[in-house]
Length: 179
Image 1 (cartoon, helix red, strand yellow):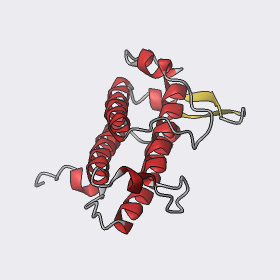
Image 2 (cartoon, one colour):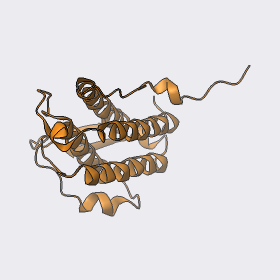
Image 3 (cartoon, one colour):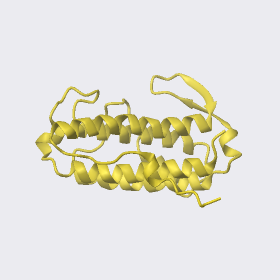
């Protein structure tokens, strides 16, 4: 069973990779950002918006079962109606929201206990189906969804000659002390 410490590591990794991705992406023009490159969500910008859509959808679901102080910020956000919703048309606004959402994810993970991870939550999917699943598995999904689509963005960046750099989690795992 995963622990809060493991999810805290993933939240920090998630934030670092998002910071690097937005820094690398900032080197592109708006026309390059929006160019349809045949990706699932067409462009770099479409994919970055989709990652945000997924995060907002999941955070709204998670926070229905939480009393965290950042709850009002997430609840005031309208739930996206589809997975390809474009939430932002301005790169700097999207970047600022990414930074805010990453901080909220880190704070939320810190507010959880290992016991919370064993709980199941019930949520409704975009197409109206109801599911009850373990919170730990859904948190994994939140992070893996981002990893999946960040990988697509790094491929799109490479097509523009932009080297994203290192993406391995091992980079931020603490070194073991001699035993």
